[in-house]
Length: 344
Image (cartoon, rainbow, N blue to C red):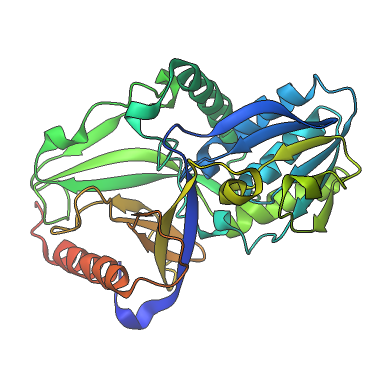
């Protein structure tokens, strides 16, 4: 890894749609129209959207018509549209912006189904079951998309730690089939300056490839995309479709008056790509802010450095202090990586 300020090519900011209770997935009514909510995925939209899209489409089958309006064209909207098409719906996506100008394009992005998704004390047993079902469906679906067309692949993630016990236990909400297991390397078995490194296998998404491929699929299967902004639920009444699937993410706060929806501001610094770097790291930066995971993800469009989460911050301005912390932290880590003693 070559980390330096002169290799920075862009800094991006996105606002994750977080609800302490987790995502909303339910059917409702808007006068004579059927309204299905599918929003509030936090930093887990890439991971969960095929699952929640499947469940939203199953709810839509109870509706008499087979014309659907999907509101929003991030990853949640695009996958919901595809799941509806698979069930015979004629789909039109209405959105104020389309890829590459969506929040989904600003994600790191890896299979992290609990990232920024909920607050433990606010979960309910009913929601827990929805989550488990969504993750099982999504995990199976995403495996079938692995390859260059969709930009989905499997890579190693390395977490340098001082104590091997820091590998921790698996999240009890995660189904057994999603756990790939850890390998712990001890002193002299790896090139990092930390005593131990935990190796995990994880799924990686390349947003620019993935979202573009999903858009192409929606259109190839007869879908239409209309650029349109909605300010109030009354605006939705003008739509011809009597079935509406709300995938507006953070936009649902204003559009539907959800008081629990707040942004988690995330920021990424992108370095010039390196063809010989094909892995991710998590942590390894001493002195980082507590509770914030500093991480690196290698992709074809660049080396992505992240690790910020600012709750209820609405600005899209770059946080220069966070930018400096993340870049210089990785500069130090990989300088130590290159100088660390290695076993013979």
